[in-house]
Length: 416
Image (cartoon, rainbow, N blue to C red; front, side, top):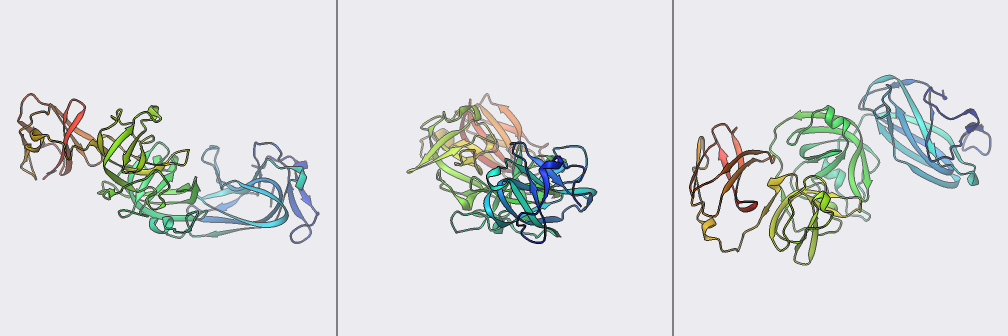
């Protein structure tokens, strides 16, 4: 049942071996000493979308192996799904397990071993007693995926295929953040691009998703995505959790939307090309940005309120990543600005025209929705303003009052 059409081992590198098999008369020996992986696949068979296929096998020798599924088609990016690489250095048989969820239904699928960097000192890699079982995917909450209190704080579902659900709080070029509830253990990062794009996922969508729980630099993610389903769109986002964040691992806030209040900028030069900067609260410092949104150069010594999702970079250092301009603004608390304190905004709620009085020191007003999309930009020439908001959909909006690029005050109003 092997040597499927996607096998690219030559005959003398995929051998039936009789040297001390784990069980029975023979075992399989694979030789692939280059860094480029080679595939050893089954003959075609059927797979079903959303089903999790578990590979259980015995292995010994020296080299790297992962399991995989060829799901059909000619696109090498989407037609092959792989588990994580496992490094094997053992002269004795060891049982290994990997699970891969199918993102398609196909009658021409092939299961496989993918092997690279084998070494002759332990007779390359030998395999025996492979079983492939199919099972429906368990539904697990984001809280249960994330919750752990035991070092090294890996998810209890690490390496398992699960289905979970939540509301999208942020998007990146290669994934999204989803959340169910507010605060610790409520957020999760999903590493994917093709499935998210195909489903047309946007911030505020309620989604269900099937993928493999993975630990990347001790940061819990959902990877090797099988399916993404949009349940509904335009949902109210979960509120940002007020945190006093530190520049160390915070397992409980991974992927969570948080807000840091009254943080002092202490450095604006860190990885400036990506817009990264640093704030300090008490004795603790926190990196800001670097992935989702490039904030205009922060000003050292200035106090900021910063909202964003908790993420980690390649260096494994946790950070708060603002999503857009509305997530960062200057904190003016405690500063004597009488002209700001006298600003009057009415009526609120409002249906047609918003009145704003006593705007001394303000020369521009920007209006954003709660997704961070700018709806209006109004230049001012006096101390009072009437703003026509009849064309805005009903909802809650942020009103940002500015002098040049300096934010003087942020308020909210409700459009009826």
